[in-house]
Amino acid sequence: MTMEQAIQATALCVLAAVLALTVKRGSPETALLLVLGAAVAVLLSLGQALGEAVAFLEELGTRSGVPEGLLTPLYKVAGIALVVKVGSGLCADAGESALASVVETAGTVCALAASLPLLRKVLELLMELMA
Image (cartoon, rainbow, N blue to C red; front, side):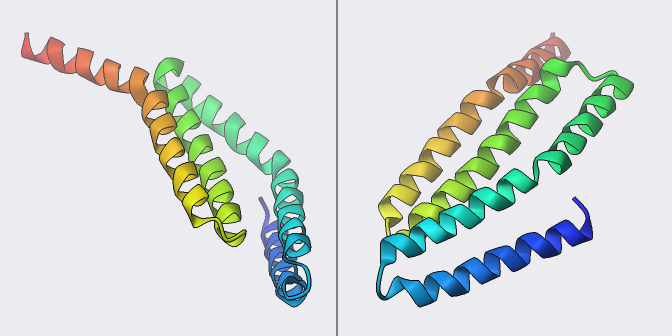
């Protein structure tokens, strides 16, 4: 992501937030849709930057000799964290703090589940060292 993209994303989000505050009094549903639309637009614009980051991480894994099975859980956990952060924030903005907490709890459980292969490998290495 370039500096220009970061500035554009920030400007779009700030503009959407200000417009949502203005519209919220008369139509809270419209304000939420406005914020949701801005979030989707920014996330879609990050596709190329995300692709470049993933390509670099794959290259890093290949060059470092670290097995892909050890890096994949890290990618999954990072993805889960990003999705949960956005989803939780949108729920909170909609006034549904209980749902935001549920999204965060679900994300935590999913992140733990996604990291199990890595934790198993760590356990195997520890057992080898202790033997």
